[in-house]
Image (cartoon, rainbow, N blue to C red; front, side):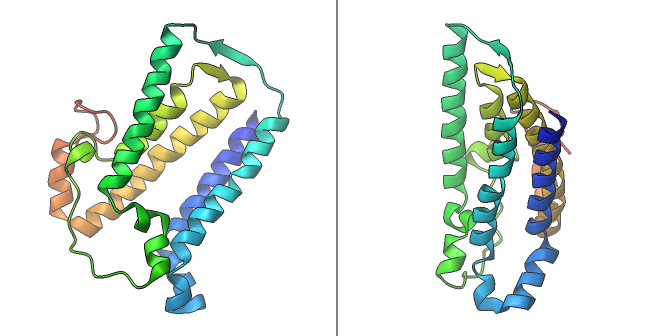
Length: 197
C-alpha cells in the first residue's frame, strides 16, 4: 500500500511541476510560441497517461474490501456520485472547458482575456467547485477497498495542497477582487465558514 500512496504523490508532484509557470515558460523558450500553444493539451494528455502506472500498481497490489454499503444507503451514495459528476460538468461549463483542456490554445492564439473572475453559479457556493465535486465523487463509492482508500486519500491530499497553491496564483492574478471573494466564499465545503479568508 505504501508504494501505491507514493506513486500517487509522485504523480501529483510531477503534475504540479509541469503546471507551474516556470515549466510553461521553459516550454515556450525551448519550443517557441507556436509549439507552446500545445502545452496545455499535451500536459492534460500526459497527466492522464502518466496516471496509468498508478492504476497498474493498484491492480498488482494485494487488496481487500473494507466495506460495502448496503441498499438503500448505497443508492443514496450512487445518487451523490451522479450529482458530483453533474457538478463537474456544470463547473466546466461555467469556465472555458475548451481552454482548460487545451484545445482552444492548440487551435490558435487566445484572444486577450477580460480578466473577469467567475463568482456565480457553483462558484457562489465554493471557490473550488471542481475539486469539491471530484473529492465527493471518489469518496461516495459504496465499495471501499484498501487500495481505493490509499488512492483516494493521496488524491485528496494532493487536491487540497494544489488548491492552496492555486489560491496564491488567483490572488496574484485578481488581487483585491479575489481577496473579497475569498472572504465570503468557503474554499471547499458549501454553506460553511471553514477556510473563508
